[in-house]
Length: 640
Image (cartoon, rainbow, N blue to C red; front, side, top):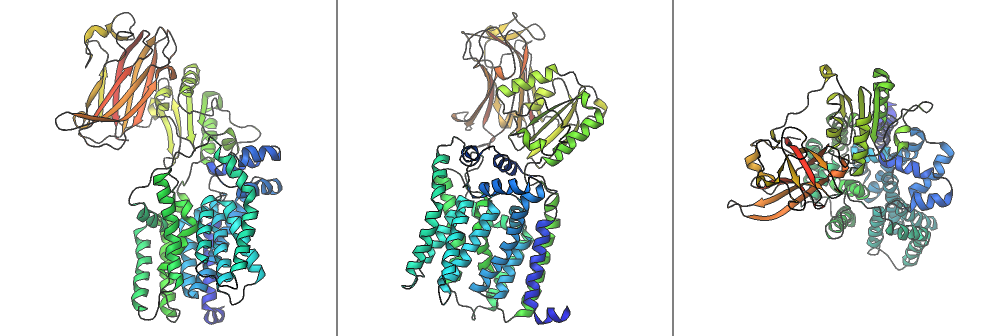
């Protein structure tokens, strides 16, 4: 063994890198919960009938047909176990390390290839997308294959027919995996036009032609998807520093790991300054990293936001190639020491500093199913009302007992009238405990307010990195209640002192009252209620993010448009209002019924403020102008 290592040190290090990359990808890959997107893909792959699969499984998606079609076939053969669903993606992730080594070794030298392969092996960015049954990992693999066969086609002494076919197939499969992989391979193919010779131009165009012909079926998918009402609205417009944030993200958001990589770049650049000449491959490394970024960045600014770290997975390797491109193979002993330090630093960063294997990277389903089952057993299923907010019952039932799955009174809470449904479930519930979970969705802010009308005590609560949550509420178990955050500011108005803020007392009424002697009546004479308004700086000197409001209301007529409204206005030092840059409301019919007193809730997070002088105003608006009575208004401000 030692003799083999001494005679073949580079091969041994490559095998070690592949071993490390394999262990990091296989470890815990079945223990990690299937993600929301994986469940969506699996559910669509199991639709009955091929025509329904094309219509609702592929055309209804936002990705090309490739990976979804693969899952359609794969699941039919191997089933839906986590192991079998994710296995091919793991394998492609490991092979990507080797292809990256081959490309870099061909462009520069074997030691540069080892550094690039080692970095890809331990970075959590490529590890994560190797472990998920999503398009990004396969698109990365086939994008690298495209670069490999592109390199062989253009720079081998002789253009072989198999390289033409392999280049065409790699291009088309990458394009079938992800639309931004299509963008990347187009950049690669355009780059090739600068290196073409007269004797290989025809073959190059032939390879492109084959790829275009094979991609024609997905053109019909694109047309169908463009008519699909589904929208991607969770992606934010990138800020000015997004490019540098992306580089930091590539290196695990770790200053130590980024510093090691930059130190290697600077040191090898200085040492090899007079020995290494800049080549076309240095230029390509920079161009292929930078151009896809700028395409995504400016499209996000000018058309609609699409830029996320994962769509730049296909190009990130070329930053690594450039950083390590000045490594000289002649300095083997130094290189071996440096690569050892790099691998050790990378492993410590991913496994320990970033706690990759104990971090919830996406919405959690597995542990929520386990906790819900466990709590129902502990407190008795007959004593617990279960509600979950989820995209599909299939996602949670996958992890529940197949023979006797836990039953939920409600599976979806998208706000609006779903809040009314939840409100009724809470009111009609006779159990001592109420379990509520959400995962893979945006949960309405008012949910806990509704539940805590009847179940005021939270006795168990788990947050999954802000992407999912589960809580168990109790009607009477105050002894085991988890202490909840106290508001940093509180205001209450029961109108008993006829305090109507910015309105005159003519709106005070004794006709319908929830508590005390007085309420406020809104009708055709007064459609706007009293405004609880103040500058942010005057409310409290403590920072706060969450605003939580409630009031009691009674409607004798139509109230479909009655709502609690929040406005934030920018004010200067002279109290001059310039604009209402934030407006949000919560309708009464989400919570109450006609001719009954009911509690209306409104909760939201503050946007980014222009200044502490901004004015926050909360008021009731009754555009229906039918009699509407409000009482016992309260507002709480919380740090988060």
